[in-house]
Length: 393
Image 1 (tube, one colour):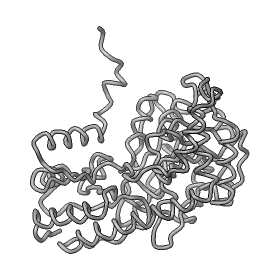
Image 2 (cartoon, rainbow, N blue to C red):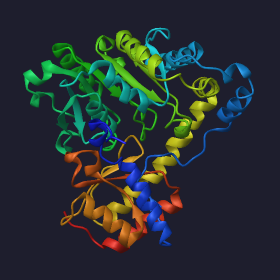
Image 3 (cartoon, rainbow, N blue to C red):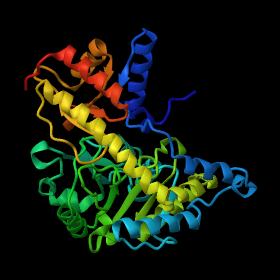
């Protein structure tokens, strides 16, 4: 067999595949591993969503090919939810497209707008698919470092005009993975103005909009006046309803960009299983969906307090993140991201994610997730304390 395509040869091993392998190897050695590495909700999908799925799965109409853009009833439910949640008006026919999980759309939008040699503006650190999707489409990433002193927000002033004028897509993600940072409306106003000046499509990834704490409410970039002229937003059922395995998301916003992605998808996939769409409509429209989100926020907030409090007891000075289920933590003196995460695995049997897995600017940090119940989270903190003693920076 001839070698695979060069684009495939260029893809690094997926970060979380490596983490899963490390967990498997440690458990084969008999270790009791506590994983704070992968951002996958550990609580079940709410029963009322499962019940709707169970009902719809017997309907033979749902056994046939679905629409590649999704059922209009699902798209209307998304539009109605955006209207209530963000006060954003959307036309479900032209400004909403169903995705097989938002990750699929994030990767595929690059094929819709990026030709070989084009440039995307990609935050560093960031969700790996932003840069890898750019590369697979033949584009190049101009990296925007997210620095702690700037609240982990990109600085548009560092982008040369020649690069900005050439750029096709600006990737943004707030609340942010991996840093947990949040962005205000003033930042989104700046981003929209920048995109209009340089004729750039903003792709805002917003799957953590409902995972907020201490009274904070995350906005949508589409709340900004004129944002739909230059922006689309990806969102998902995965995090608010514990549905990561169900694979259903959506993209909303600029009608041209949504339509181009819908046209692309009609040629490469056959849409999302309709029974899942019906179940997701229940999540978006049933009052129990809001109740579940509020319940999950309380659960994650309690875990956050244990994790951040435990780390601060041994020398860190971390603020409490106001969103996501991630905590972004600088490594102590004498370590880089890889060596520190290896130490925790080998000596404490605790898995965290090395920050450099999210980009070069992530080196010197690790990411810990809140996806362990309180007892296991407390146990992980005890192990880290016993392993490290007192840390210095």
